[in-house]
Image (cartoon, rainbow, N blue to C red; front, side, top):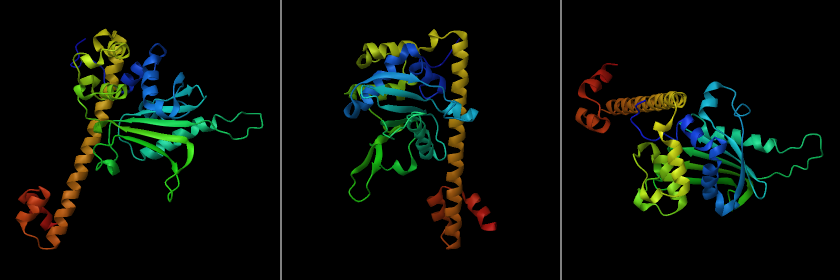
Amino acid sequence: MVFREKYINPFTDYGFKRLFGEEPNKDLLLDFLNELLKKEQGKITDLQYLKNENLSTTELNRKAVFDLYCTNEKGEKFIVELQKTKQKFFKDRTVYYSTFPIREQAMLGSDWNFELKKVYMIAILDFVFDEDKAEKDKFRYDVKLTDQETKEVFYDKLTFIYLEMPKFNKKVEELESRFDKWLFVLKNLHKLDRIPEKLKENIFMKLFEIAEISKFNQKEYQEYEDSLKYYRDLKNSLETAKEEGRQEEKIEVAKNLLKRGVDLGIIMNATGLSEEEINKLKKE
């Protein structure tokens, strides 16, 4: 088996599940989540892996979403979701998924008083929301229900945490905290050909060992290759759609400038369209 990368891509469905979705590797996910939530929730003591059937009704969603419930010493629960590609109405989807652990806290057949435990929706994103692009250095968003006037938290039992990984640009020598190290690994694992000195800690040594493609058996290798192909196909489709959208925007700008009688050279500079393309628009 020959593979051009040494380590798996965590943003593939198979890659994420191999690192974080198997019982023997539970300590990896516990370590990451404890770094993510320690300021607010303290130590997480247990994870419960759940099947996705309750959350997803289509084959596409089952491939795109990975979920689990976690419990800390206070008994609080939250969902972890890895969203691997940009999808329409993504924020709506995260709100929808958060309703499942809320509803499941109801004790059937008893006089439940509606007191809820906290729920966390955590999304590790390989894209940036369009509305966040101007904030180039802010990659973590912690969202709660707040009062619009006072900006005070109105309800603290439902939290959405979004990590926009493309914005995390620290180099290995710049890593300071354990949380930094986790983000660096998640973003760059598949680009590395060795374990950096700064990451030679027990938890990361285990992660790199699990992630090494050369240690896969034939079935594991094939499953990962299929998952990687699916991931790349989606990424390519999204990039193509984005490029087509940009081209349509350029054409609209050119049409508006033509209507105003703007000089051909100015239109070419403003849109990047060729003289031939602009003359074609004139005839339409």
